[in-house]
Image (cartoon, rainbow, N blue to C red):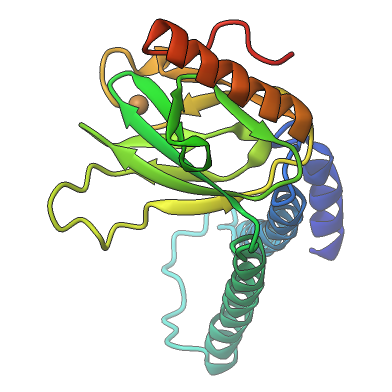
Length: 244
Ligand SMILES: [Cu+2]
């Protein structure tokens, strides 16, 4: 049983389940996932070993047409299969709670960002830059983003795979204050990523993507300036040749 757990765990943990990581929240999430994989492998091993043993031990010999012995209850076994899963689940819940508490901690200097989803388009608004809007997401590296979500029509879902965080955008309408519509994330690697809508939201769902550029603070400031000028010049600005 333990051998099967070890072999299964070693094999499964090798997989790069989520791909590249590019946020501060990613490592604790990935570690949590690996721990859960090991626990699941342990449970799977118990079930498979018991299953194999039962098939072998209690098989019907050739010519044996008799009924099985009538048995009822087994206190030791029942205590074991209640206590072990309870410990596993409580451990998983406690550990997840700690990780969630950690990755949801708010930084004082977080940058506010408003994300609006609609069929089939993302819009980003920067309250610190006079409400500048863009359909390409640019953010500075190593700064926590305080993201406010809004959906205009149906349910969408915000997901940048490398950041790990995934959150639904629910059209709240009147009195929708109780909907959990914000999250924080701290991108810690520069580069270009894809924001993917990960909630089937209509015929154009597969096209509902946006480019995400994580860049240095200087490049980000420059991009904001460029965007503001383009907006002032042409009136109505989306992203053209942004920061590289
Ligand atoms: Cu969508």
